Length: 115
Length: 113
Image 1: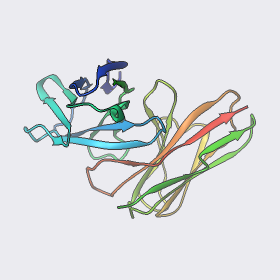
Image 2: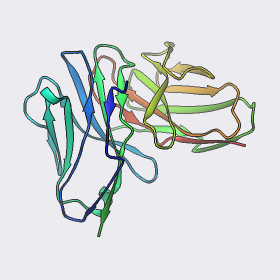
Image 3: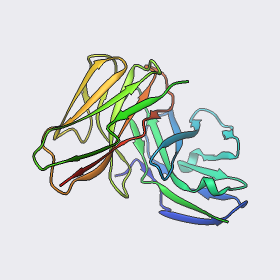
Image 4: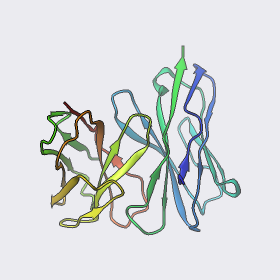
């Protein structure tokens, strides 16, 4: 079974609107860490934002924010005022436990921002 | 700040050939990773190294060897390239013990003819 699931394969939105990308995860650990990454057309993967499981407040960085719903094991990425350059593939990831190998990635959601 | 570099950027090989991919980081990070990314799939862990001279197998280690020559570099060898294989190999690093995000290199795109 997949530990991290992104059900949206691709999304298209108009420029300057808000988009939400979904991600659900599966873990038995009481402490874990959730991340969102952006992969551009060139293949570069850039870290965007993280949420620590013990924090109740949703993380926000620039025009990225998270919707962390712990009871639902859900961590949505919200991008406000989307720009053309936000077009990319977005990966959700989870790190659990103490093991260094315990990073799990979703399959990604492709976002297209239409001018 | 720092950077992760991967060489080569593109690698074309023949079936059965032994191919080596290199990764260098100047973050002074302890732990480094090799992932494989196939089209439409997430990242799959091949090897990781907690610190210099350490090697740990990931879920996809069969068909690969790795080498952590020094703290700043981590190499991956495809021991016998498979025909029609096409994937991107990504190197990443994190600080030891830190529950922090991974930093990624730009990737090496492999094509096997």
